Length: 205
Ligand code: ITT
Image 1 (spheres, protein in one colour):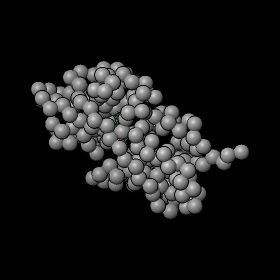
Image 2 (tube, protein in one colour):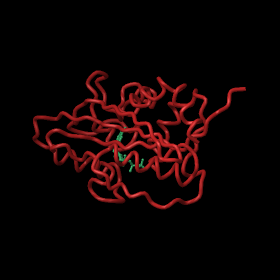
Image 3 (cartoon, protein in one colour):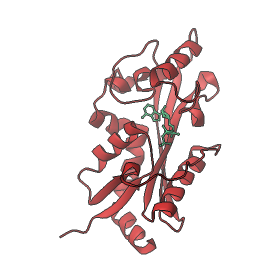
Image 4 (cartoon, protein in one colour):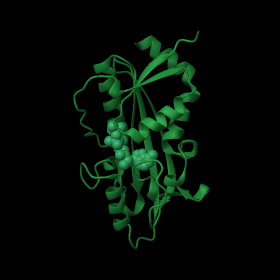
């Protein structure tokens, strides 16, 4: 029987967990979430790039828990806001506010702006307990809608309009979003070389 490899999802974001679980459902991997383990110290995301924060999350979790860990650092980059909210996407508008509050703040700031170009960026970092890591990144171009539509997904999905499908990400199913999204494309890069990745993980545990 095929031996399954354990990977811990180093994220507290339930929306990301749902997308990862959907993506990996047919792969020879057992995904664990942080909820499967006891409390771990808080990881401060003080990097200035997605890559730094992704590595910080994956390497800390892998070292603490002793399993390979997959982290995602991602965000929405808006040209007319000079790249904001960018790496601060999760905390834009403050801690402990809702996704709706956060995207409404963006809509407010985008009022009257002609250039509505934006992209979601995603960096995935897969670390083993020794700290060695593989990195994958991808982005997805879209535009900031004038008003929210759809209630699927999470975060800024209701205001991220994706022209090729003529819908916001909030109007896509999980599977539809994964085909075109920043996270889905980065996951595809990883899974395209999964055989090699699995060997690498086994050699480094
Ligand atoms: P973890 O660090 O625990 O993974 P987080 O939500 O804090 O969770 P990030 O620091 O990577 O994660 O922040 C990413 C934020 O960017 C996320 O909270 C959303 O607001 C936004 N975001 C990223 N990907 C998104 C997506 O696919 N759809 C909508 N919003 C997204």
